[in-house]
Image (cartoon, rainbow, N blue to C red; front, side, top):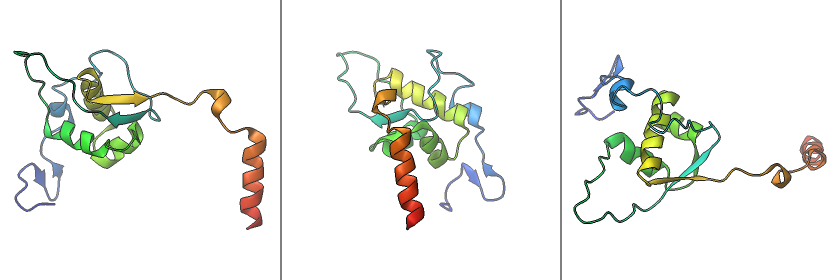
Length: 128
């Protein structure tokens, strides 16, 4: 912890409550809640039209964007942020809505390894 960090208290943790980070919102603005295993990745910001109002990006948003330079699951981002999952989901939804993040497509069932293959791998690991 940085000794000059006025938003942290050594004994009690963050001084700013999580709901303050989301403006009191408990759900994403679009209502779509990301799954724990959804994989998100940062993307370059889209070009804004001349005269368009710039999108507010908070320090928490910037930290998420830094964590998502490489694809990461929602659960991993929440863990790395040290914030409640609900708060991180709202912050991720903000970034998705502002086209700063992208959700990678989930694997289809037919793309998943078969149960037989998994059993063979497990058998091989046990043999080690």
